[in-house]
Amino acid sequence: MNTTLTSQVSSEAVVMIGGGILFIFVAIAVLVAKIMVVGNPSELLVISGKRSAGLGYRTLIGGRTLVIPIIEKVSRVSLRNMQVGLEVKAQSGGGRMIPVTVTGVANVKVSSEPDVRGNAIERFLGQPSTELQRVARETLEGGLRAVIGKMTPEEIVEDRDKFVATVMNEVTDDFGKLGMVIDSVNIQNVHDEDQYLESIARKASAQVRADARQFEAQRKSEADVKEAEADALARQARAERDAEAKEAESASRQRAEQARLGADKSIAESDNALRIRKAELAREAELREAETQQAAAQAQEARLLATTVKQADAEREAAKAKAEGDAASILEEGKARATAIEQIGKAIQAHPEALKVMLAEMMPGVVQELSKTIQNVDLGNVTVIDSGQGTAISGAALGRARMLSESLATLESVLGIDLRDLTKTIAGGATNGRRGDGAPRAADVPT
Image (cartoon, rainbow, N blue to C red; front, side):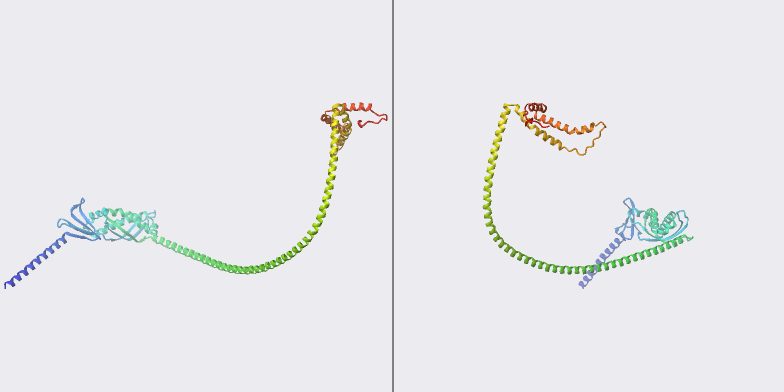
């Protein structure tokens, strides 16, 4: 009995202890859930109630943080895109002042940049998303009006990208002040009540169609040109192949002709070699025969040479004897002349006047030789022009006499003898020495 009671008491104690522990865990979990906040990546957590970094709040994007219950408060700001519809009617610029209606859609959101998101927290914390959309719409429409007033209708229609970029640049600073950013702006339609833009569109469409037709014509022309070029290339390739075939055929014929010519040349060379060999054999036979005849002739010539040599030796001895005799005679004559010259020299030394006598005897021959030299002087055809007094003709006639006189004067200067004195001496001697028959001596000078 007591054992059973003890067991029951122990079981109840265990249950109570387990329940207490579970309560403690649940209480801790509830407490943690109360003081821990988990943020999503697509939302901005604003924890206010305690100053941090000089601000009365702190922010968190994603992750988790602990908050102090009662003291701190957690607010959430969505970072998702918000689609804002746009419809603006404004006067276009460029001096046209045409009312233009622009419709479109923009995607905006609260900025997650630390330097900018504080502006959104201050302005839109606790506000519904519709308020953010309203402010964003009004800001975008204001920017659209400003840009439409700066651009012409043609620029708005023809260059949408430029239009959108201009709008975004126009409102970027304003959105930064609001703590928001523009992800994109899509212009859906641009029209006007006067159908001015429609006319521009029709014109542009016509231009596009014309450009398309021109492009198509250009493409067709290029295709025709390429086709013509392909045909020309094909024809050229066929012509080249035909030319190569003809060239190969010509080369084959040329090789065959060269082979035939080579064969003919080989045959001709063989025939020529055979003829040369026959000629060489004939020449060798002729040479052998000529050598035989030459040997016989050399034997005869040897006999004749022996006879001729003996005769020549005899003639040489006779000529030698005759030459020795002539030399002896010439030697004797030379000795006699030397003796005579020596005697003449001695006589001249003994009798100086004898030299004049010898020269007087030589004068006729000297004068005769000088007369011959003057006689051989040919003056050619000489035309004598006289003034009528006959002096020119007499002067020409006496020219040879003057030449003889000048030659004698030259001879006097060379010999150192006065021929006039010598002539007088010879003339006196000739007068005294004439023979009784009146014939002159050998020293007389002929006139």
